[in-house]
Image (cartoon, one colour):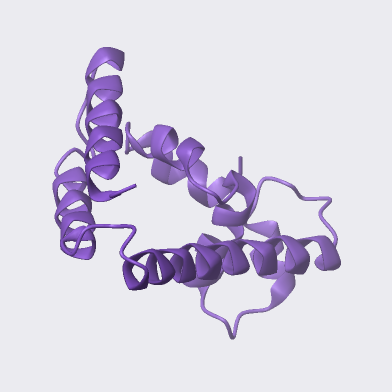
Amino acid sequence: MGYMLDQIIQNDPILKGIILKGCITMKQLDYLLTQKLNGSDKNLLEKIMKTNNKTLSKASYIITRKRGKNNLKQAMYTLIISYYLGLVTVDCFAGLEKTAFVLKEFKDKELRVEQINTVISTLEALIDKLIIV
């Protein structure tokens, strides 16, 4: 895992479990976060050095970051297509927004493993309800 994401996950007990269910890798997320937090005008080497992998080549960094961005785009298109074809409920986007808001309330809280698992399984059940098929 990378430096930026490590710091965030330390303070967010649920995030790692949610990331594991997503379609973007930890490394890709780390590189996207590095770019977001440091801006696009920063020197690429500075961004690379803010990750844990000090031996990473510029090409590897760029490829991994680009794949991460493409994964996010694909996820967005998948949501749009699913809504357009009626595969998710009308309330899907509002439900996802409310869910994200509720999840932020758990940020920076000390939770036991079983509490984290309960939150993640509740999230999964909610997502299942938003999918019609």
